[in-house]
Length: 266
Image 1 (cartoon, rainbow, N blue to C red):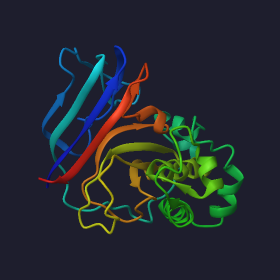
Image 2 (image 1 turned 180 degrees about the vertical axis):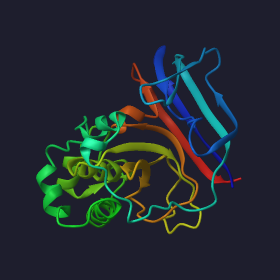
Image 3 (image 1 turned 135 degrees about the vertical axis):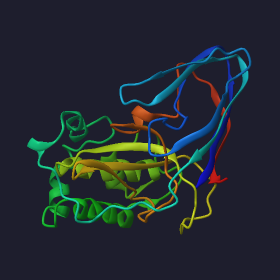
């Protein structure tokens, strides 16, 4: 299946502002990039690099005044929904690969040490492996109310559990925090997700967040916000939490005037 994904930002800046962007689809994922174009403000010189997690980052300086940044891509994806065998086993910590161990540790917004006891009280008696991760997703989906604007970029998973409200970023961070508390490596994922055969609210399209858990020798997607198999996930970035995959990091104070995101069948 072919998808068209992308985004457009309009910023007003009071002066030259260095910025780093993560909006491009990862070139090394299950999807295949057929074409892509990144438009930066006139006169800006853009360079790209791979960060610690292999995410593609673009850096350039926003000029004083109005700035428009646009990314548009055609992506080929599998036309089948997410599939995780509920019998996929949990890997004992001593047998985990070295590069997965960092995703067991607490991070800035995912304080797994703080939620450790709650996680084991809620999920410790259930079966291990994928079934336990799904139980985490079910709980988060049922106990966190989606409320736009209820949190901000500095809200932690602990605060979301306490308040009972959040957005898709928060659903993902609570889910992966519980998993880490249960000795299951889990990493945050940002990306594009079309509404194909999905029972989702008719909200304006936005960037999406979910998490991946390491089970049975591989990484598997889990999505407590939607909590149903989905078609067409296009990964932008992976990291310990949302701080590692911010769409825009600016070293100044530009004002966002407008943002548009698209993800649809081509």
